[in-house]
Length: 592
Image 1 (cartoon, rainbow, N blue to C red):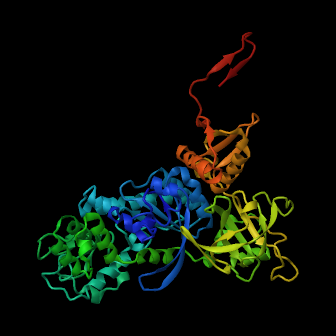
Image 2 (cartoon, rainbow, N blue to C red; image 1 turned 90 degrees about the vertical axis):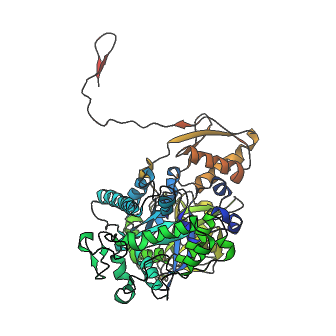
Image 3 (cartoon, rainbow, N blue to C red; image 1 turned 180 degrees about the vertical axis):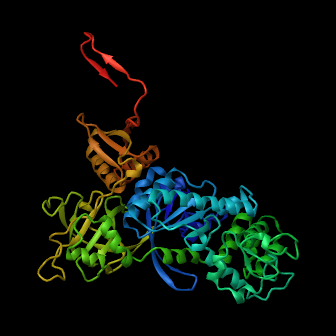
């Protein structure tokens, strides 16, 4: 998830820590992707967090997805860049109220430059109902305006190369992380048509739709119904057919008004009624209404306050967020299908070698090639787990490998080191699952190889490969280092640091080296005066860096100077007035 919002979408998929039950009254506790104590204290994401999950789609088929939850703050844009370098696609999360913001534009430019498929997730739709109290028709236009704005920006930046984002195409998701649900039009259509199979009495039908449209389940498939749930589509209550205009439809026999858009009638109005029930109705009415939908709530849930009641009701009604899985499977390619494009964009060498052909084929029997783009600190703060994507070959604990740094070339192998893989893990958020081997096409955490990695690295096998006597990596090149053009290309704020106790200078220097490993865009430098300078993207970024330097990596007291911002100025147009300066003897003149 490449997120703009402050509340991670992962909260809507049930990714919670063990203490979540303790804070259920606030809508959930520590999230699985908030692995750091500082993230839980600040209630925001600071580091990207990979999670490998087995999730079912609407049809019940299970897929293994590796999701990287990225911070939404502008200062931590580097985490998103590192994650996009390894990913096959991006799910951009946009706030339903705020819409497109500065960081959204930065992320879209980065996604387009990486050439990744894009799906859109509109999060916090509950705020449009509970906070802004928009009528259903206005809420539809608000959501459509967000989608149109994203489409216009993407089309302009990509010169029309990207497909249009639209709910009826299946590449837009609507979600509420606070209340634990996410749905696409197809998943909601499946949910809706399944409800028509219930034998519901007229008195029990609190949502007023099933009785009048009971023929939909026999005449429409979920795919066909989903296409008609967006845009100018209206259901004629008399002929039970869909029309392009409300003027072509007969008035509703009960209300006497023209029918609403299908998105409003079949999705927004039921959502509004569910929220209204949870907020203002009695316990008996809530239980009776949700029972008509097949949602059975316990007495403790019915007696709870509005927020936990809404969360329990919506989670039981929507169940697992299968709509997100449907969208990912349909619009984001598998690692094997995406390998060719990823290698062409990220690999710095020629694409004709046998090792490259093995990477393009995602061959598990080829030479080992792993692209490491991020380092995650271990709990002790002394070592790091290298997060990378296996393009070719198979890696196992105990394998001897070569770690190729960012300065490595086939002609200059100074930035190369040998290492032994001590462990191979599957990322699981705040935990890791150790495995005995991992094949091409997987994302893994590697232990024992971090000592020679500064930012990114390319890991290849140190022994002979399946290519006969050729070791397969004699002419191998590295994957291109990370670049941050959307964030100015380099950090803009610097901070001078020194230990309170001069004798602890070696500890601070070692801590700064680990800071550079942990934060992709953090850099350090020693001035001629002997000052240690730390560069970052902003005040929040440097505040998090200093917290880690003091408490995680060095455990010392550090003095800091006032932060300094580096200004970059340039000429954008010709001045209409000429300015000049003359020397004292009037013999020389400088004109601007």
